[in-house]
Image (cartoon, rainbow, N blue to C red):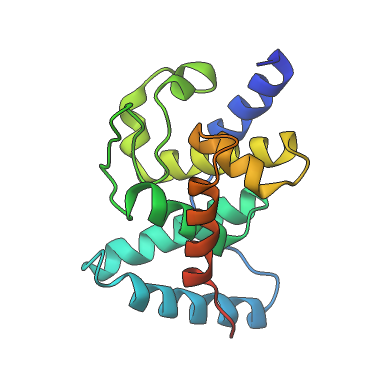
Length: 172
């Protein structure tokens, strides 16, 4: 990885801004609150605690928007990667909601892979890495998602994310 890319990612994940959505007008805020209410209902089976659901949704919204990603796509990716389980660990060692590999904490972070189980850290890394891959693939989501999962060129993973993306779309 080029030093410029590594440094840009490191800068992206080091910003400690709390994940609180901000809005330029009341209509945007109302749309967000409607989205949050609907998504909280959809997630109730997976995450029973309302406060935990709201905090997760705040962070997903914030980190998705921060990285310039579609929120429903990120929700679909999380569903495929971890089924919304904070402490999910894959057989190859990927961690957390977005199944971030521990080497990323050494490449762009402070080296503490345990932080990948922290909600905001995991979402920040995952969204930043996905944004990098989308940019590398010049907007081709199929290739970027395959790269994110380490299965580039195989259709199963991108198809699963794109299919689950539809489960999280919201129209107000």
